[in-house]
Length: 603
Image 1 (cartoon, rainbow, N blue to C red):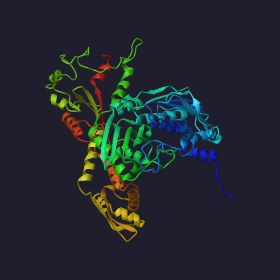
Image 2: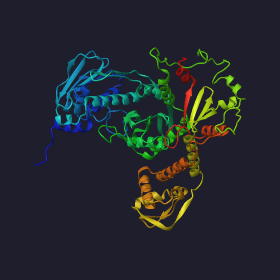
Image 3: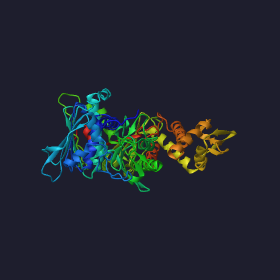
């Protein structure tokens, strides 16, 4: 007889290889258990990057002695009964505690709410002890020491203490964003204490705790619904970005996930608005019927599988693009702070100088330039300059322009043009500050949006192939592709069925020039198979449109007349997406009067 049943300890160690990859994985499982138990305060203590010690203390419902004995056995759980179709808790597999206990020294001390005494149970390398009385506060304390001592080979795959401590911090931050009503305290000898007080229903306040206060000022709210799938959260302005995707948080029915579909949708929503190599900041929460999503894809429960992935992806892309269309063109606050930082060395010289403490600017409180002073920058007195002859953007002596800037024009979001600097930057005056516009980047976006609109309004020009190109494909791919034949035809790509396993390409988009039709068709077939859409062709066309816009826009170095500058500003205000160029760089930077006051030390 060659087949034999493995021991319970070895089975648990095998399971631990999937569930507990590193100390951060153990923290995730333990914090999830605490939240499922109704905890409102969770304290996590670590030592040695979690290798030496992990302690999670909560004020949840706690456990009785009989529950403790079962909790350390595989597949014992209070969270599901007979089906996986209605999972509403974070944990449900009943594997975490026995898996941890099989590779570490595990002690669980718990006291049921309302009980007079507590109990304790231990597991060391898979060897368990029965529950015994122990002093305890209401709630549960789980202590894990010497993780992977029973499987030394796993220790070799762990990173440095600093890296493992950082991974634990990231886990806690993700859980904190998902559950703002819970207070999280992360401390230990290997770190600086992180205390995240509960913010109740104010989700944005919790996001600001984790992502930084500047996220609050540069975030756009998302609230959308499609076919009983809800999407809420906040996304950053296109000009508010980071160097990696680590600042993108996704939750499905409250569960933190790292799903490729969601990350891909976020990336697609910011297409043509984000610089190459930069990533948007986003916190998205998806709610839907638990029966429509499978969370039992992987033991770590970080991946999910949607029954209708196309619906979810379309909802995310559509909602983010609508939000960016609505508010995405405002300047981010980091642009002004970056400008102030660049100026700071010029006025901070001198041993006695100390940078002024930032404070909100108010006309009444300003000691240097009150609103009703006879002279000023953004006051009503500025209209006294409207009758003066302003310098033209052209510097020729033969050219003289008289510019009449009304107070109404200053009330526009991008203000009234006052000058052109270095033949590329437009300086405009608003009611409460100034705006600096990159004329080439701004006009590039305007031309690009006009070309994109043309893609939507009418059938694109196409070029007829002298000899139709026949592309062989599996029959099922041909079937799927032909479902989108009408959409492809509007984009200038004419295809028709050519037998059971091939399509004939008769026309290709003229905008693309000479194109490898076979490669294009195969890419489209792959995309339709994965997403149910044929967006790859539109993406190629939009890329060409972006290139054409770059070459067809106002070039740097061209002098503009005041009326041309103001016309550009008004067109920017009326064009969605004008806050960034086609490459994702900002087209303008806004500097408030409060920032200017601080630059000169007047506040």
